[in-house]
Amino acid sequence: MSKKSIGYVMFFSFLAIAFYFLITMLIPGFSQKNVAPLSFIKPFTFINQDGKNITEKDVAGKVYVAEYFFTTCIGICPRMNKNMLMVYEHFKNDNRFMILSHTSDPAIDSAARLKVYADSLGVSTERWQFLTGSKDSLYYTARNMYKIDDPHNNMKDETVDFLHTQFVALVDQNGDVREIYDALKPTEMNKMIHSIEKLLKDPPLASN
Image 1 (cartoon, rainbow, N blue to C red):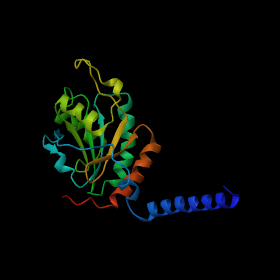
Image 2 (cartoon, rainbow, N blue to C red):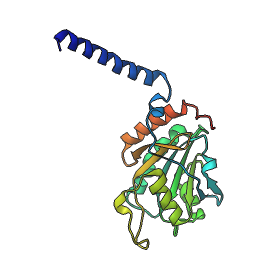
Image 3 (spheres, rainbow, N blue to C red):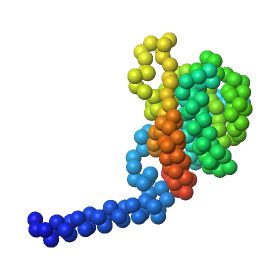
């Protein structure tokens, strides 16, 4: 190939890359729509801090973040939720957004205990819900829907199985899990805020 031909290839390659980045900035949600989701949300039912059932219908058409924690945690959970407060504060007045915090320890974390925890954070539970339920359902949802558990934590013996993860899932308006973030890192939370902003500009797909 001649130097002239190589020059043409490089020039048009540069144009193609520049065009891609231009449309990702000008067209809301372009990059998300063209990336296959990591997973998708199936029907679920949990109990929130007020003792009410929360299902997938309560987040239908919303962008939301799913995390797991437990109220007696003195390790990563306080750090995670301190960082999650950054996300909450950014979107607390937007009814198109929610945070779902699931307990990893339903034997301890009753609805009443979650209510006390929510009050301690000073957040509106209209925007940030705290959920409990059966251990099997909670863990299945984390591992098979949100894809946020470390596989090494998936013990064979359920008597010693305990889910403890700093990862959170970002779910779009169509119930697709788009990205996973490390909630221990403020830089990751800032990236997630940016992704949420982009998703909120993009209307949900029409159902068939």
